[in-house]
Amino acid sequence: MIRFRLYALSAAALLLPVAMPGHAIKEEVKLLAVRFYDAGSGLTQVRAFIQVPLDVLTPTGNDANAVVSYQVGIHLLDSAGAMLSEDAWPAQRVSANLREPGVTSVKSLEFVLRPGQYRLEVTVRDSVSGTILTARSDLTAYDQPPSASDLVLAPGMRAMTTSDTVVQGTEWRNGSLLVTSAAELVLTPLRSKAFYLLEAYSAAADSGTMTVRIRDSTGQVVVQSPAIPVRVAAGGGVLRGQLDLEGLPAGDYDLDVVVQLGGQQIDRTGTFTMMPSGPVLARHAAEVAQLLTTDAGYFGAMDEPALDAAFEPLSYIASSRDLRMFRGATLATKRRFLTDFWEKRDIDSAGRNERREQFYGMLSYADSAFRERGSNTQSGWKTDRGRIYVQRGAPDEVLDKLREGRAPTYLVWRYTRGRPEWFIFADRSGLGAYKLMHSNNRMEPGAPDWTDILG
Image (cartoon, one colour):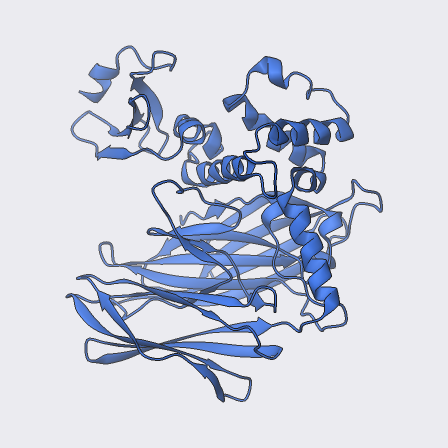
């Protein structure tokens, strides 16, 4: 059974550029599957992006509390059409206030494949109208090492730093890079940078050049970069960059990356759309941006279940006394409570609330990275590792000890910032369910017989 790994994202962060009213928009689900190669296992790693247009969904009503809701089904079939794996995600709910042309919800998932031919199918069911939207992608898993991965185009990309390792919004991680998810890259005059990434694979360290060009719908090259020197280590490396395409006319384009490496030429292509300019676009984009960055706008876009979900993990950073006013409150009071809670913790009270964004970004990462499988599937942020990560951030040092004899696989997380702390987690089930065994923090629970368990 192939397991899909869903990256859950905050509803208030799942937006792509807004198109100017009157511009034609393809109102359909977008699916993009990108393949990478793991030389150690010989398996193909797939990251897929699902993009759902909100304006094709039916809202639950016309009041301020109305939402749009949809369910996602994921199906993986082999070349003969036999079902290999399937999954159904819980209903995704987004405020109907965000239901505008060009505004989309984005989900990301990853899985691995053995060599062969596959088909990935996605079904999106409108919870109100029952309408079903579908998308599919045919996949060929590598049967031998490729020269490079597929090309990734993204509206954003940034390098992690020692002080910023938190995944924000729709970002996903590639090594030391954080990449913004998109099944379809859409640029606007207000956001005109196109980011690109691919992995080049080489048995030995090598050097060469990389050129990027933009072709219009007729195939004519309209932009071309000079040849950029590149180097990859033995085994391969990540090649990336960005182009600012401000001034590019509205339309559909191809972005080609051409790499000369190891005496061979590697060509990879992706597509993107440049939306038209205009005062309506600028005003509407500014309104959406304002809605997403303020505490009032962030929580104002949520319905009651989403507010409850945003409140639940606050027990990690606040006392039960501080949180008691939320339980049993009205919808408006819950929104006010959460807004006040984070406004009091804002660093500078101007513009974005970095502490709120960091907290929910860490929560989103923990929910995906530390989710436990087995008979009692548990949200990642509710696990022992998830709780420590949300409270303290990424560890400074990690020891990963594989199963040996009767001793289970275990991890040691060490924090050197401030008061030194360490935490030992063991996977006694063999299914990735790591439990906290011991810590030098006396307030943390543990297992009295932890030394016997770990040998």
